[in-house]
Length: 116
Image (cartoon, rainbow, N blue to C red; front, side, top):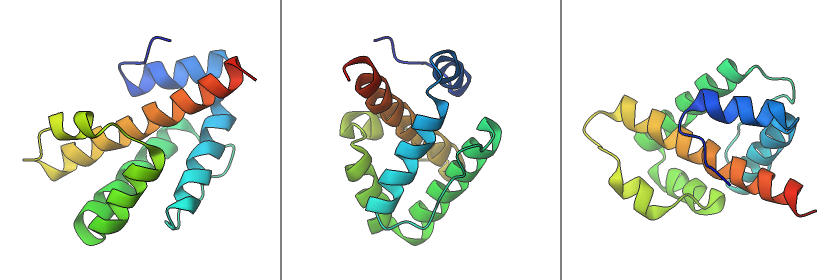
């Protein structure tokens, strides 16, 4: 499996394989497990998904850091990848973390679909 390098690549891959809705459902499942009140509609536009996820991650980092760490644990984002990010600009950091979350969720959906 080749992991996408950008958000656009990720969405394109998900749409090509008709797995975009599965990706949204996986996000909803993990956010629910992390006790974070964010529930995407299955038909959410990719741009809205990206914006809402970015905004939520930004608020979590600023206001509820423990919940943020819990979310990263539940989604199973690589600790190495998180540590490799530049934390100087909080807005950029939250955008990068949002992509890492989406990328990990995409892996879960892709593997589940491939090996079902």
